[in-house]
Length: 345
Image 1 (cartoon, rainbow, N blue to C red):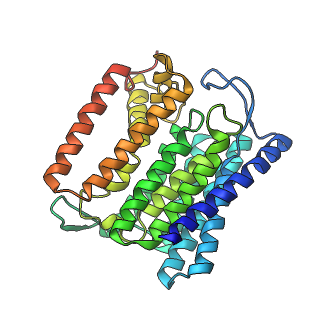
Image 2 (image 1 turned 45 degrees about the vertical axis):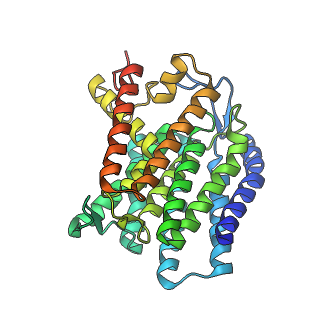
């Protein structure tokens, strides 16, 4: 177990040390997030905090690889994830300074995903049905994996709207996948998610309300991309439940928030990439929650999703379906009450 403590602790320590340095860098280079009608902060805030998360994660992974060693396949997967993740960080950094068009960001995300899938063979080759039988994707494996990587990258990116929200949700999702990986004996996946959780927690000290720094697209896209990539390495994707249900549940909150945002924008006749104030966190603020209250509530929801994911691997299929049904009913009740899927007037 100490190996995972090392991964978490190193990542957290580096992120704690690096974040104040990134704040200084952002102030000197003008990487500031200025208030506008859609945002909830009232003064310019540094917004390239993802660099500290990236530094924590990569430092931890490099240290772990040197100290404990990896086999050939693990080295290939690790190099692929770090390299493609670095491309995502570079893309996010440019966007945080230049505000790239949505289509340009999407193209960059596709390129980073293509590097991981085509050059390092990290892909979803098969999924499992509810009865444990394998369904091989064959020629569909590459587009399916790229869709997964790009989709998860954007779900975490879109939920980054309140102080500490994306970092906390990503940390909870990382812990969830790590626990399941430990149960299944997937060491590399557990190490990587421990490191990702540590870097997010270290950054959270400076990002929780009132935030001293935002992670920006540099951080939110990196966290989303790495969670997506890590979840399909090794054999986590072969857990004998509904195909990819574990990472989907672990990231259930941002996935649902993104899904309802797409529905809302399509119903309103606006481009799906156009930002709005209809996300769950905006709705919670609108009904009287403070930033801290809204974020803490969304942490609880994410933790419940995580517990559901863990339960899916530990109970019978029938009980798993019951859990899924209860969660879905609760979600749609909340959606109806808050109007999350309604178009913005």
